[in-house]
Length: 137
Image 1 (spheres, rainbow, N blue to C red):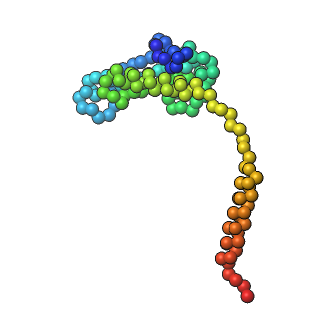
Image 2 (cartoon, rainbow, N blue to C red):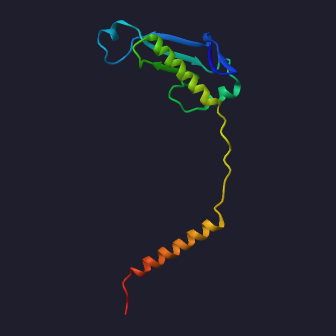
C-alpha cells in the first residue's frame, strides 16, 4: 500500500513496477544487474477520487502519456530497492501536489497614497530631464 496522506492510499496492484538495466556509466555492474525501476500508474483506472484524477490528467507533465498513464523511471541509485523507493516517493509527491487546492486570487487596487507618490515621482523625473535640455536664449 502506498500511503499518500492519512486518508488516501493506493493499493500495490494499481502500480506496475518493472526492473531494467540502468543507463550510463557504472562499469560491469550496469551490464549485469537490473537496478533501474520503471513505474507505470494508470490514473483513469485507479481508485483515486475523481477530482484528483481530473487534476492529474489536466497537467502538462512529460511523465503523463496521452492514455493517462504516469511513467516514472528511477535509476539514480545503485540498488533496486532504493530506486523502487525513489519511484514510489516521486509518485506520492506528484499525487500530493494534485491534492493542493489553490486559493482564488482577489484582484487589488493601488491605494490613493501610492497613486499620489507615483505621480509626484513622475513629475520630479520630468523636471529633472527637462533641466538637462539645451537652453535657448
